[in-house]
Image (tube, rainbow, N blue to C red; front, top):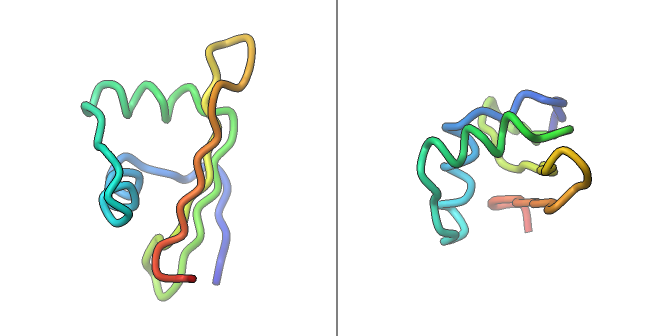
Length: 73
């Protein structure tokens, strides 16, 4: 397993949310959340993104932190 910082992209974000049955937001909302993330980490196994962790800020504080690990539990 390899971990990469600040490389979470729109496609992987959506794929991982779908994999656990979470609601998908509009592309505009998602791009804004990714842009406003102070820090992201992806877990990569066999060239596939299998996990992510991200925080989202509203410019003054962290308002959420999301972690998804797909197929690792």
